[in-house]
Image 1 (cartoon, helix red, strand yellow):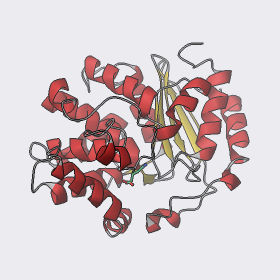
Image 2 (cartoon, helix red, strand yellow):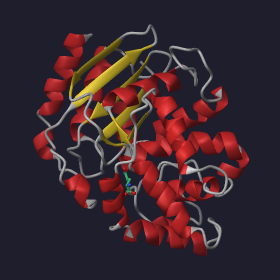
Image 3 (tube, rainbow, N blue to C red):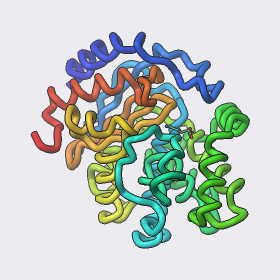
Image 4 (cartoon, helix red, strand yellow):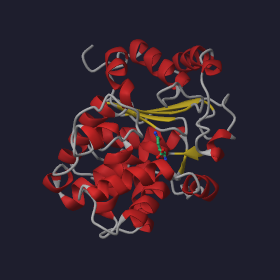
Length: 303
Ligand code: GLN
């Protein structure tokens, strides 16, 4: 297993030069794009990790998986999907074109518009502090904290997400007057510091239908996990989701911090950190690593 990981990492490393860090959030632009790490946690309890698997980076859009799961549990399926769709958008993660022109609802919870809408459902019923506790439990990582520098950097460059939030408010998707609070909650969730290992841990919880691999505790309801994994498969890599599903075939969610969370169902959780991103905002080396792992470990859901 270690050999396979090393090989996948080496191949992924060749891609790093073709990508860039997410400089639209200045603090992310300062991250060293050459970092690369991967961690695998299998359902028989084995953990293997190579490269920068223990380096902290911000979870960014991968937090959308957590907010969706919590919203499904606390608000219910009907409320969550009343005004947020479950279709791939085919557009960039921060696009507002279709939201304004052709579709009155966000396409899905894995893009900014959908996640900001869901944040607005959660802010009245759950504190950020509680969300942080839940995140720590799901990732089996008590050292997850808010990265204040990244949080402030994003809050100072928030125009686009603000535009999305006000558009959502104008369409009655988020309650009037809740824009600031929803954005703050959304950006805080994006600014949590995780590692590739924390993501592998979370991946294994999802792979096991919400069950903590060590204590056996049911951390998330099984039907919620089923919905979350399906939406990760169809929408988790933004407008690169279709191609990724064909080549990798493993439900995954990326973030512009360079992370990818992958769930090989029943088998393993995979966490990746590689902050050099492709044009769509997905870790360029991470994509390559997952392609190799999917092939070598036979992880494609239709293999
Ligand atoms: N915080 C980022 C944003 O809203 C998250 C985007 C991402 O990871 N794709 O732009």
